[in-house]
Length: 104
View: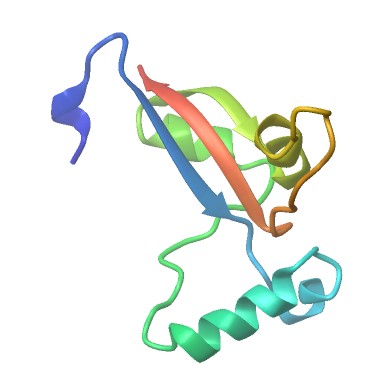
């Protein structure tokens, strides 16, 4: 429970994954390699949940949060993975998203 930290200036930031069905693995950048690595190195772990694109606002509302920002993989890359010359220095697996929210 993080509700006890509810202060007007507090924010919560987390990453989440969109669902990865077998037919979506080849269509989502890096997803196939990611799932293979998860199966190989973290077989005892599984995703606790995933959120479909377009449903994050409802998820936040249900948890008494307001979205400040939601970044898809390419937006994450352009915000955090550019060098001093503006060149991309890495890629984010296509199923990952970052969200920043505040308490209602």
